[in-house]
Each structure stands twice: as C-alpha cells, then as structure tokens.
Amino acid sequence: MSLVRAIVRVVLPICILLFARVALAGPARCSYGNQDSTCTTPIVAAWQPQPQCTGDGMTTQVPAVWQGAQWSAPQCNYTPAPTCPNGFIQTSAPSWTGSSWTAPGCTLPYIPPPTFEPTASCTAAVPYGYTASTGFTYNSGYSDPSWAAQTGYPGDTAYVASGYGPGYQNICGNTHYDYGLVCYVSPSNIGGWYMVQTSINTCGGTH
View 1 (cartoon, one colour):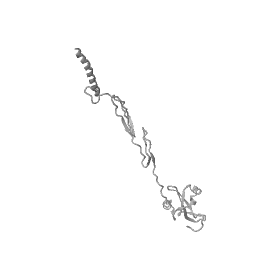
View 2 (cartoon, helix red, strand yellow):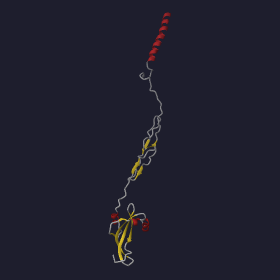
View 3 (spheres, one colour):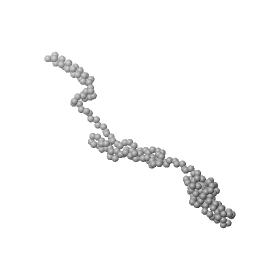
View 4 (cartoon, helix red, strand yellow):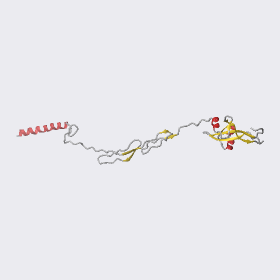
C-alpha cells in the first residue's frame, strides 16, 4: 500500500497541473465563443438623452416623457421661414435663432421715374378754356424760385407755351385773348398751372 500511495502522491499533482493548464488555455466560460444555455446576457446601463425637436423652424410643443424604460417621442411644431411681402425683393435670408426666425431683408424694386415729354404732357393737361398754340419749352425765367414762389409752385420746373384763353381788356380798353401758358412740373408729374396775360400792356386793335 505504501507503493500505491507513493504513486498517487506523485501522479495526482501532475494530472491536476496538466488539466489546469488546459483549462487556462481555453476561453473563459460564458465569454464570446464559450457560452451555453446557463449564460445570461449582461445588462449594460447607459444614460439615454431626452429626444429633442431639432432642425430650423422646429419647436417643442410637448416634451418627451420618461416611461420607465425609454423616452416617449416629443411633439414638434414646424414654423416655415418668413418671406417678403408681394412686390418686394428679398435682399437677405431669415435665420433660425433656435426659437424663432429673424426677419428677412426686403426692399422694393427700383422703378425708374416716368419719362416726361413736356410738349405732349403739358398740352394734354391744359386747363379747360385755354388752348396752346405752340409747343411747350423749358423757360428758366418762370423756373426761378422767386417767380415760382409768387405762383404757389416753388421749386418746380416751368415749361411755357403761347396760347389763347378767355378775353380780357388791356390798359387801353382793348380786348385780348393772348396768354402765356406756364406748365409747372414736379419730378413725377404736372404740379400746377399759371396763365399769364401776355397783351395786357399792349394798346392796339382787338386780338
């Protein structure tokens, strides 16, 4: 018996050492590639951020709520970017501040002033009872501020034509119908009229 015991004492540690080396050489139990039905899926805990309404024009109506295991979806509202009113030209785009839109840059389109042709425009606007006998031409004398101030149309440009109108008597008692038709023009259209009696100081026959 002493021999058997001596053999067991020598062989047993050798076997234990060999089995231990084989066990250590293989993958750990329940590791990747070494799993069975007794292995469970490990639980991994991580912070789940609250979902938000993102994107230009998006605002949150109802925020997301934690439901114990996950967040609910937030209720979002979309506001389209503002545009310029009809007839305006956009010069700069609106931008999203995170809660609202900034106003776009808008401007009216350039409209050149109407072309003014004094003869046709002033002739068409001659007051009732008067008739132009010549075309209208620019007259610096009637455009002078001191003269224009007397007529009530200061600062306007004057175009003058010869014409006829209601009869009047000159200092000699003769009846005349001669007039100077003064057409005062503002930058956009005709601003006013002034009729000058041209023969009031002329004595002679009836005209």
